[in-house]
Amino acid sequence: DQQVKQNSPSLSVQEGRISILNCDYTNSMFDYFLWYKKYPAEGPTFLISISSIKDKNEDGRFTVFLNKSAKHLSLHIVPSQPGDSAVYFCAASASKTSYDKVIFGPGTSLSVIP
Amino acid sequence: GAVVSQHPSRVICKSGTSVKIECRSLDFQATTMFWYRQFPKKSLMLMATSNEGSKATYEQGVEKDKFLINHASLTLSTLTVTSAHPEDSSFYICSARDLLRGGNTEAFFGQGTRLTVV
Figure (cartoon, rainbow over the protein chains, first blue to last red):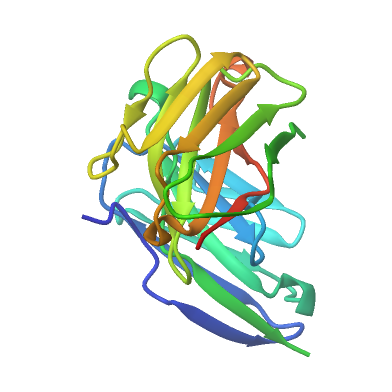
């Protein structure tokens, strides 16, 4: 049972355009959401996060939107750059549960075309 | 940001032998560390939660006798793959959260360990 879903395994975007990566979750206990970027054979790198008390968080070119009622979040990257090409993982945790473990979605491979 | 160091980055071992992977938090105390495994073109699968000074909590389907976890100090957790078999070949990643900072914080990840069992 996948608690965090990323239904698009891959996405191609032209350089300079907006990249929108989507994520859905099923566990209503999740209250903290994170996006990570990962290159092959490396550990994930934290990008941006959002708490369930907010609906938007922005950091430079990266913005995360949260729609709690729909259990949906999205990561917007604008403008997209070739260096953004990587696998992006959506992740979630429930702070009120033990140990605050982070559960990952399956990832979306983003290709930014020059 | 906080740094998590994982060692070794790459290891090849013979079938039947055991391999130990270390995960260290370099600039914060990690009362809890997490071990993940990633199969090719798949997501990060949480294997277990490692707690300092107590037994690890394993996710469903993960053999605790095969994947031994020890969290002896606030900065070190180890994962030992015992009697490794080729199907254990995978990319193993540890992470830690600085829970003493309070509130929600991001998890920091080690560089990962590519295990190949031949």
